Image (tube, rainbow, N blue to C red):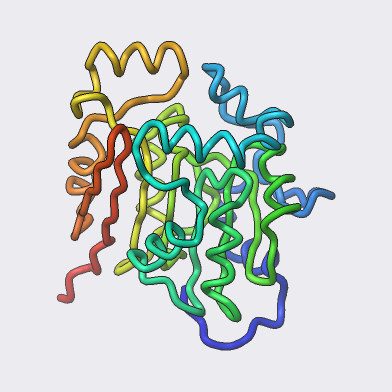
Length: 262
């Protein structure tokens, strides 16, 4: 949650304080600069896209491949550039002292930048299941307000209502149970906090279209219908659900409602 004074403990220690002891069986401090709550319990790999995400080759080439792929798919400017980051930070209402969780962070392109926006007393925590991606994130996108955790997006290790903002940017379409992951994103978000999701959109906005099924079978990338995620968020009680569509990509912002005052 928000704080306003310069922290006296490390970002990693502050990230560890967000964990829910009832959801975490182990916490391993790795020698690679992140801590691991998964161990060998990584989410299963069902397709080539998920496999690539966990390889050293792809984690190294990700900086080039991901922007090009999303640009071809959507027409959106290559994510990770300052203008895109600033736009997302503006929509999230990020400011110094905030805590943000970046789920499916990959090599930390956004996580590291978010850490600079919430400096000096805030915290940006990148979460990914790939050891290779997290090693790259620590090497390229660390900072005094940045920490990385190896965890499963479908079973986040954090306590309820701990984050002022939660993001899942270009990762949801690779998660085995994406709506279970969304439930988790909402759970860890504090009332009044903002959720941002950047993900795929099926051709024509229909998830079971022929092109969408072919893309999933050939690449492992799930193509979501135009109302699948927004409808789910409405059903979960989020407010201010806004969807921006460009080509085969959708960007969604929503707010977790404050509980009713009785």
